[in-house]
Length: 76
Image (cartoon, rainbow, N blue to C red; front, side, top):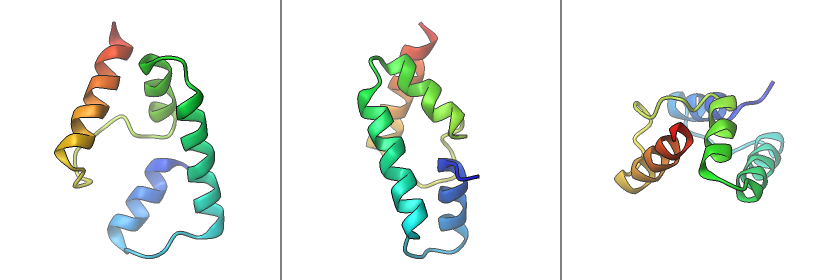
């Protein structure tokens, strides 16, 4: 079963192009995140996708700041 975290971990170990299935899946998750009505809902989607930790993926500071903001909003 595909999950965002699985795709990220696989790409971290072996950088490569996404498969068609992965690409479609990421588009679906992206659409779901865009449709979410709150940061709390967005964070629950990211948690479901296994992205409950932010370290170890070399995200840019901007991405980490946004994910942290979304996570904090979900806790309020």
